[in-house]
Image 1 (spheres, helix red, strand yellow):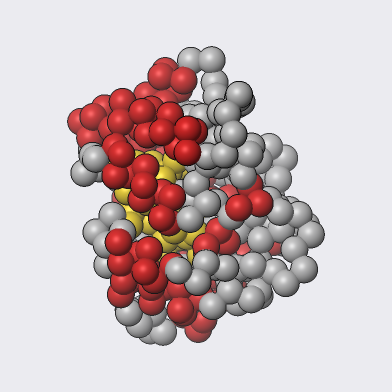
Image 2 (tube, one colour):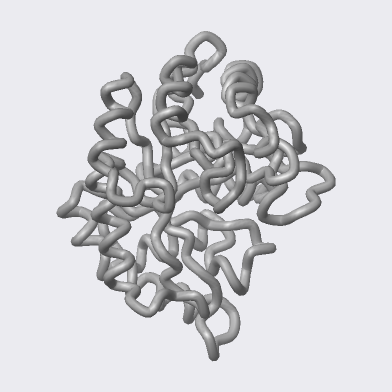
Length: 283
């Protein structure tokens, strides 16, 4: 397990932590201002959301690299299954892969979408998901992009996900069988899972991302009330130990906090400074 007490170069910001994943949220900093602020504080990388990139992927990717950081990833594909799949799924999925490649992002996160209409349980939906991922994997590979399936907390079952555990995500990875398809592990979604170390041993070599936040004891909104690292009940050190020692992950640690009533209302400079301090002390 890596020691970050004196070195936070593995720290990456997911811009959702500043509210950039939703219209009208956060302080409205431009991508350029976020890049410069992260670079000034010694962050190693940044993860964008598609909605803030527009047609500027190459320009913004170059700016990140010129600042001394890397583009760690891009959020996210469209939903691939469930009732909210876009009408032109193939086109939207290809566009998300192209944007990731243009940014120079090595990883594109997949939030799967919910249960397929007319089905019960999740197995049939997972099988359909695997078909879509298998169709996209060669296109992503040709663009130098890996696809990371992200299991979500079971409370998002039905409308946002059909993957609830690392084991679920690995089942789909195995069905796809492509070397550029793996998983992303998010504290918010896995903190409760006592089988995590065992599952991550099975995932060794296929962990493509690690997302940091915390689970508040009295969560008020299941989507938009995540805790800043250190403010909740998740055992952050134990989770990272499992991700690194069992899962073999040595990549960036991406802070991703959805917090409409707390952190999104603060000065982004305060948020970025807090992340650095908490990361070195607690993560």
